Image (cartoon, rainbow, N blue to C red; front, side):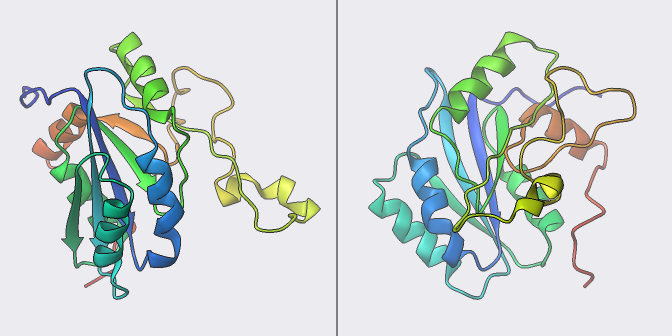
Length: 199
């Protein structure tokens, strides 16, 4: 099976949220400050996943207040569950790379620059995994150091490079994949089995 038509160079940032008004403000502020690589386009796709707290209105007004640095599209997915939301967001993506952002992720301003540099340096790279740093509202307890991975702090991989055989676990938050790979998977019938609320 052939790959679909190549997408234009750029990043489609997919942000899925359920009742995210209390978390989205600083997340959008950080996304608005991203430095865009030369000759790249960017869009922000917010997937409003069955929210009941005016998430869509809040996101649109916040983005306007931030100066509309690049296009924002709100897509409503009424089936509860991140599995549905991710599929909806990825399917809507326009550009060559898809970056997954949770509604409480604060991206550093050079995130796109570093991602583009890595991806463009080697055509064999299929997935990039970010590294997360915790922001605590108060000094954390000492025991948390033994449970950082449970809180998605740090990285599930200690080194850069190819995944060891049968060890393909990565975090979705901060992950970048090629849109062409996603389109290929969808064309052969791929869909997520987990993180979907039974209807």
